[in-house]
Length: 199
Length: 168
Image (tube, each protein chain N blue to C red):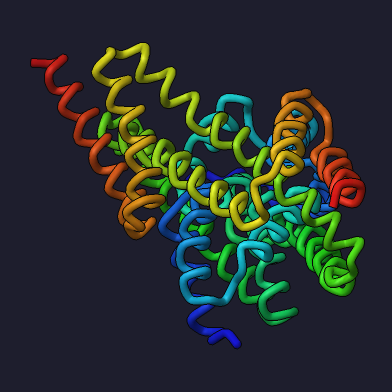
């Protein structure tokens, strides 16, 4: 990966401070945090271009683990190699992890109070509702993509979605096997489709 | 009592073998099967992860705390921080494999599968808390509020907590 040569102390301090602020202020989930990172890294500090940012985000979506942590590492690395990645990551995680642990500790201390138990019984279905929205947001892009290809491709996508749910929910198949199996099946189908187009 | 090494390994494995929120169904599967986590703790951790700052993926740290205190949260932290470092490797090979139809297909298949399996997790969480007119009302209300752009998630969670206090 190409790294810029500017890695003066000021840049490193700026890098850490910027990610610390993101880690401190990014309440409100993934999209809000991503918007904040883009504004800081692209518009404010010009660490990378808008095109690079989009490409990085695409790479994070096929890399393991939390995508926002991935893009933090990539941008930090671009600014100042290993030192940059470490500082950006520390900046993001120090405030957010501390607050997360403090919030959880506070909750754990009162979780057995009757009033908190009632509140939790309200929060759990709400979390499920937000989860359903997330499922919808995850499933919609690949389904629309496959619909634009062919009805066979759309059918395969829907079958994968429903099939995976049934395999795990009804037959209790191991989750990792189902996830990777689905990836492999759709990969083969996409490859065959591409070859058919060429041939 | 949990085995810290084994717990760490489950967290690491789930995050290594998935991307984004894909570790949610894997962890639900493995940790509940081990009997280390209850559905209630799982849902609580997801909810706290939604309202705390930083990536939503930090919910695993909440889960670690609820299961094993500060030690559990630190094991979770390390377990979810190591896998994303591989993004540097993915970045290197992306030029050659990123646009291959099989890669794109794999990503699509994985995304669809995660969505499908996540549905199963949600059904389990709902069943564990009890499906009643009240809980369905809160679930639908959260979806409705969630569709409003720019409404912070914390507002939805607080509204749900108040509804819970009023209804149960």
